[in-house]
Image 1 (cartoon, one colour):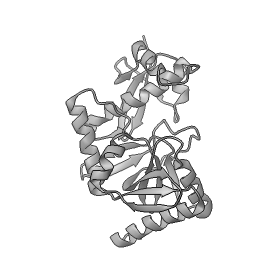
Image 2 (tube, helix red, strand yellow):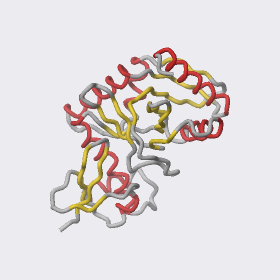
Image 3 (tube, helix red, strand yellow):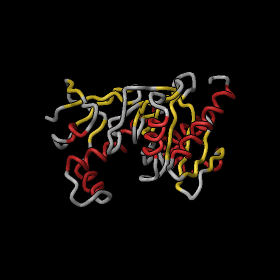
Length: 246
């Protein structure tokens, strides 16, 4: 009989059964042991073998299961208007801001630059894969998750979405608004769910639409230097001033 563990992701308690005992120790915060046999999420041996194809060949079974849990959790949140999103999420001025880009594009660099240039201003919510939640009032909230990147940067902080920034490395520092039309394709790719039904696909599209309707988005072409971080901060501050929230 498998042991059942529970994690609360984006405000929703989800129950997990792990194939490998070491998997739960890779999750941070650790899931808690609960009574009962029912679970919401369990990785099958077939899913493990499929997932192994996308990871380094020396990956342990526990690590492969840990990675597979991301996609299964993202899909489990879709019926509730939530998902797991690939981004660095930080809290600033009572809002959550998402820096999203492919791996090794400088998300953590921007956070660390800001932290050094303006100590105490920002708090990392999740360094890699925050969980999103749509609330009854239509707002989108950003939460930490157990998958916080190799630096394991996170805090037990949640905040309503303030804006999204799509990062791109370049030979200059330049930022411009990202229209919904321009943002749909690259931002959809940052959701960690792989929809298997029309309902899941529509739920993911509805969440992205809600994000783009309730929060501004920008594209930041950057060098990863201090000047790029100051440009980012000035842009977000100008947005808050325009809203009367600065």
